[in-house]
Image 1 (cartoon, rainbow, N blue to C red):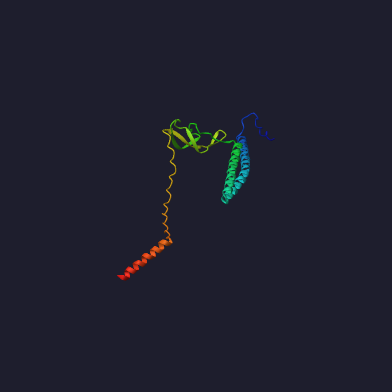
Image 2 (cartoon, rainbow, N blue to C red):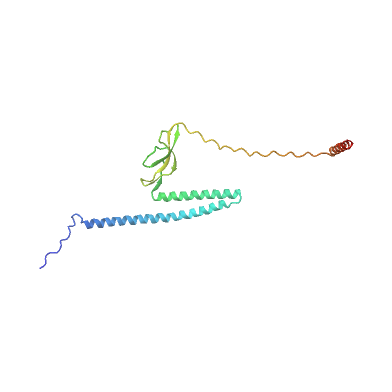
Length: 205
């Protein structure tokens, strides 16, 4: 007579180590599938941006091939509009994935989200106020995706405006050569008479 078989695990008891491992594997698999799906969507959305950039490159080539001022102005406007469209499309895709640019100009510098790359004296703003961005910072949700590179104010007088470009002196043009004056007929006759008189004097001598 055989003994009783293994007792079933108590449903209300703590999970075994094997159950814990299975749950961890299932959670990791779910996160991996979610990450792959987001990556697939992101790459698919960038394909349209690639189309816009390819068209932008074509318009840049048309700008270089322009033969007149009118064609150059038209190609420049088209290229500028295309660049704006590509930038807007990229920002829209960022927004879809919860990526947003930081708005830091005029605010106090925050080392957690900003990196100071320069300073500039300012007579009225408190020190550490962001004057301008060198590179835009971005957030992914509530976390910092990329810190902003900023120039901040320091106490002091405002910098003097940059002097205008020194105009190079015009190259000294060579003085115009004086054209020989034309002699009239009477002057030519007088010259002949003088030369003839000199000839007679030399013969007499």
